Image (cartoon, rainbow, N blue to C red; front, side, top):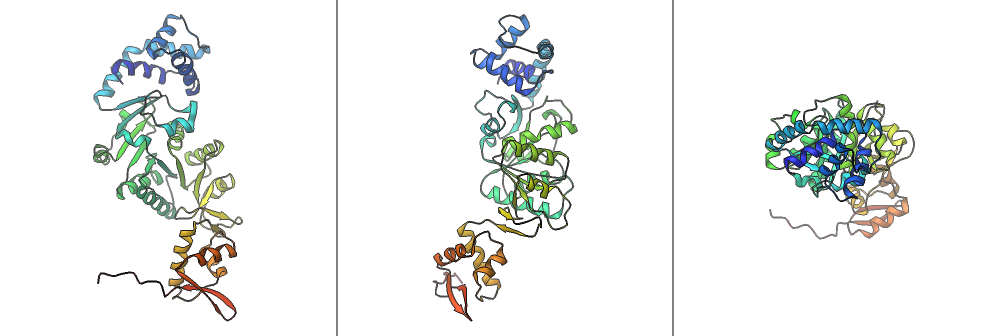
Length: 377
C-alpha cells in the first residue's frame, strides 16, 4: 500500500464516533459496491456531495474531523512505512481469511504488521489463559504448543504474562512460528528478545490500533476478539471467573466457536469448570477431548481415535509387566470413552494383542508372536 493511500485508510480506521461494524458497512456501500476508491469516497464526504451512506450525526462529525486531519495521517503513514511496518487493509489479498470469516463486519479494517506476512494465512492456534496461572496450566500450554508446532501450525499469542508468553516461548523453543497480537499501537511495541525471530521470519507482530496508541486495559480486552478471530483452533489453559480470558471465551462460545479447555484439578480454583458448563469442550493435559461424567474433575472419559487407543493399551499392559487386562480394567485405567464391546472390537482388530481366557475372564495380552523390530546393535 502506498503512503498516500494509507493516509486515507488511517483516516477511516481511526475515525471516532462510530463502530467498526458501521465503518465496514460504509466501506461496502460507498466504496466496494460503488466501485470507487476510498479517497474518492472520503472526498465526497468532505464536499457533502454524492454521499449515499446514511451517517448518524456523531459518525459524520467523527469522520469529518478525521478527514481534516489527513495531513497528519500522511506524516504518520510515512513513519509507518519507514519503520518497515506493513499496513494491510480489509480489501488486500494478504488480509487473513480466517479473521474475515470468524468476525465478519467486526474484523478490523486496517492491520499493521511487522514480520513474515505469510504467517497470516496459515492455520493458527490460540492458546490463552490467566496471567497468574498454575503449573498445570503451564504444562498444558507447553504440551499444546509442541503438538501444534509439530503439525506446522502457527501459535497465536496475546503477549501477556503467564499463559500467553509461555505459548509464544514454547512455540519458538520447539522451532515453531508465532503471531503476537498487540493490545497497543505497533509503534509503541519494543522487544529486543523477539527481534531476531521477527527477522528470521518466525514471528509476526500485529496491531489493529492507531500506531502510537499506548497499552491500556480496554485494548487488552478488545484485542481478544482478534486473537480468537485469527485462530482456527482455541485452547484455554486456565481462566479466572472474570477478566480477559473469561470474557473472550464467553464471547467466542456465543459466536458458536468450538473452544477447548483444560479440565481443572480437584480443588483447583479457576473458571474452567464453569466454562465447560457454558459449552467449552473439556480436554486433558495432552489436549485430548474428554467426556465429563459429573461435576467431579477427576471423573471423566477421554475420546480417542482407534490408533491412539491401541497405542495407549499397549503402553499400559507393558507397565503392568505384560500381564493380561480385561476390557473393563483397560477402560478404568485409561478413562477411555468407549463402551466395553467397542474396545473389544478395536483391540481384536489389532495384531498387537491376543485374547486369552484366564480364571473365567477374557484378558488382552501382548502378542509375542509379532515379528521383532530389527535392531542395529
